[in-house]
Image (cartoon, rainbow, N blue to C red; front, top):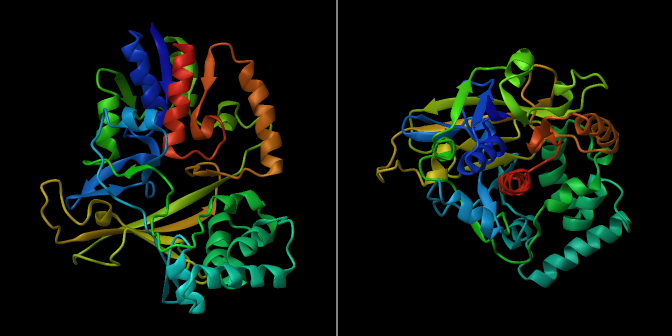
Length: 370
């Protein structure tokens, strides 16, 4: 018997496993994938740590979380400064004075603020009711039309007028020349990749990969006193109340026989016509060098295509609208009746979580339970 069976070897599962092991508990981790680290899994291709399931940039203001992850990895000084490509025109992200200057020719913060306010007034928006109105009130119509609308509609598969306003509230807008996307005290990429970091978290813990918990539930449940489940909550209950909605992402990754493709880790394609949402050039997360500081002669890029999730796809982003929120609440009520099972993480809680928030939640939960 194990004290805990942990379903999922992603960040939430790995943190709980590490904390439980340190408290002297016996732990078994299972994951249906052939690898640990969940969506932060990185694999080495041509000396480059490739983010297999999309770009992950660690950023946090939580000192406890930062101290925790630094026990398992050393972080580099990578700062996220994406570029937006609209039909070949390049703009700075997040929206800042470089963006406003390129868009309108304005030079001072006062001129930029006036331009945004003028366009907000022209649109007649007082209380934003949807994402489109929220975006126009934040950055004006010109920037919304070129840099927000097409990208957002590709990403969510819905018109901006049908998306809730809160989705865009995270968007940084600055009347400065600060190109750092995240307002975070601590930021970087683990040297050696995320997989290496999660490997260290799971040292001394039994891990079985390629094991589908839901297909072997009875047999696996019998092995442990308690279960920590980090998979999709609706899948756990066999979708008996209906399926929650997610957005999924498809990646086309290729190795290029050249040292530099786009000169930046992330370029967002904000027009509606380009089928992909962005291109990631993985080597720039580590400044184009390998772990010994040597420049890398080749590069690896990944084009990202957003799509509606269907069973069998990998669920990425929960669609946190009113309808799905109500359905999740019903599943949560079912989950609360499960005597020996705890639900956690992005899929278990049907919640859009940044990495630091996942780790903070797992630390808080393990502190309570253990």
